[in-house]
Length: 200
Image (cartoon, rainbow, N blue to C red; front, side, top):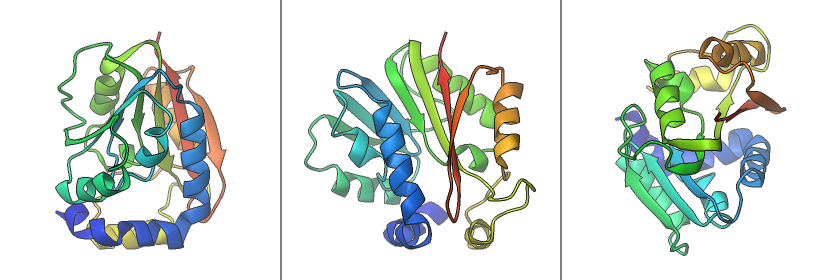
């Protein structure tokens, strides 16, 4: 699996290629988390966001489908007893309906064959009034064409299913039935859009 093989070098690539954006991304997501929150993070990767959320929330369950990525995430969160790291499938989450105050899924929507199905699962496990927070790298230009660095990753086997411009990202959530989603944009080498859905 590409992500298992890439796990050891992923942080280096992220820091070198897009460190400023990633730092801002982690800060913005963490600001949305409250101290009493129970949080589920899907596609946590090497724990880039997890290590920040975990220091703020009451409980974090950080998940990914790649054992290699989770190994790195465990190292980053080893001093946080409120953080549990485990394998999970974003398409079929094991938790009951209305379980979590916040649900985070970073940089995964563009990798999925059925992103609408994943959104339905994220929505299902989130409590009413809770927030679903979905950061995703997007194209710098509004063209829908892959950014150079993203295109390079894809050639190594990352398996991107789609590329979003900021406008296309907003349209995606509107088509998924979330016209009231809120967005923030982080400018940088590989920009990031953060969609936030408040579950009704």
